[in-house]
Image (cartoon, rainbow, N blue to C red; front, top):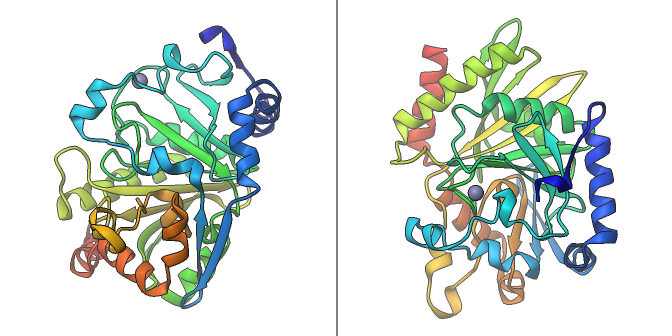
Length: 327
Ligand SMILES: [Zn+2]
């Protein structure tokens, strides 16, 4: 299988785009997945200075309802290990460490999964540099993101990132506005700025910097603080979105989470809504794999879901105070 991967040196974003176009011609299942995207339905809700979209996407049923408990994970063959990939799947080696793969169950018009070559657990500490360098190398076209092992990763046992078109998630464009309308500047120094934003629906910490070394150091501290305030047995629950531009450097948005799946997910009968929020959902595109849920969902339901899965106020205030005091 590894024979199907190749290396590129120059523009990785361009090669990545090319990979998907080639795969559409050589891999029927993937072509089918992307053609289904043309028929997804979308609803848009306006909140206080930002939008949340809801996408009805039946292709995401397996992912949204994935069993991620240790017993279920142990029973299945890991779908991110190179030896278990479909024969048609090609990939691009990334620094001899990761491989860039086209995602055959897309949410984005161009959607990639980027697993580590070795089967190693999903953890952010130890992989921050990979996340930042991927975001830089793919930044021309894509936003790179990370779902924590207990917070949306459908393979919590195999380290991976994802990438999708820049500007697809509303937050990519609404960020500056969210910051000025709902944000606080926690840290402002010569080469890094840290903000907190509570927009009434979501709460996040963002870091902006051109200095990779400094950014890595501060990110580690931020993760440490979040872990202390909101501990978990494996890794504190987080979703992370990263953008890069030559002009502004990195922008890392960290969403600390209270819960993986909201009570609606487990509700019986009419109250059940199959929505399992991860990075893309908190970035402003909520995925409902079932049409009945897409039809039913409204602003009030979105408010309830976000109130449950986002970090609670008390903890968020504590995190912001610690960042100001300790960084
Ligand atoms: Zn694996």
